[in-house]
Structures are given as C-alpha cells and as structure tokens.
Length: 170
Image 1 (tube, rainbow, N blue to C red):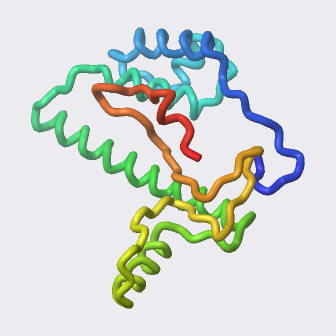
Image 2: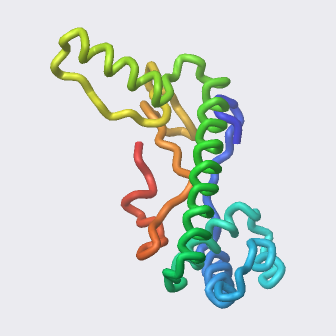
C-alpha cells in the first residue's frame, strides 16, 4: 500500500485458519532453532516471510529461559540486534510517510517543541510523542488519523499475542 495514493485497497488481514496452521507448526519446530523459511517450507504457506517470522518469534518466546552466562549473553545480543532493526524499520517508515505528508513531525521534533514550550513557561503542554504527528488530520485507508505509533514487534515473553483491544489506535 502506498500512503496518499488514490487507489488504495483495503487490507483485510490473513485468515485466522492460516495463522493457526503457522502457529502450530512454529510451536512444533520451536525447540530446533527454526527460521521462518523452515515454517514456510513445512506448511507450504503463501504468507510473507516477515509475517511468518513474527509468528515464529511469538512461538520462540514460549521456550523456557536458560540462565547460563552464555545463554544470557546470546539473548542480550539478540535483543540488541532486534532493537536496532526495530529502530531502523521505524526510521524508514517515518521517512516514507514524510514523502507523502511533508508537514509531519517525528518524535524528536515533537520533543524539541515540548521542551521549547516548557522553557517559555507554558503550563498545559501535551507531552505525548507518537512516532508521527500530522499537522492536520489526514485520511489513511479511509480512517482519519492525527498520529501514528509505529510498532515493529508486539507481545512479551509471557504474552506473545496482540489483544484486539490494542490492535487499533486511531
């Protein structure tokens, strides 16, 4: 989908039955250090590798935590890599949106504006800083948006799922 395009088609997601098949396979393979391509090969799915990787990541979070010094170092290194990848993906997304909507403010620009307002003595300053703040409400996929919060990963080790109440934030 291209933001700002006039011929945008709705994205209706992936069928739940397909996700269940992928999830079950990811769970079955999780002890063998699988890659997304392994799940794709085993299921024959046509779902994109990025989506399968996200499902697999949720399944891998269900593995017991190994607390040896070596395992801890590996886990920390993997987390640093994921954080860097998430930041790169967020920056790329913000820049793509900026090509379609040049007047948006990113998070750092908003923080500077907040700091400036506080220094000037303003009392009622909104301190929330979404990843993208539009100057005026914009229509994206038929929905009027004032801001966008980009998420590259969802869930936590104890709860690797996205709840429906968190799925949409308009």
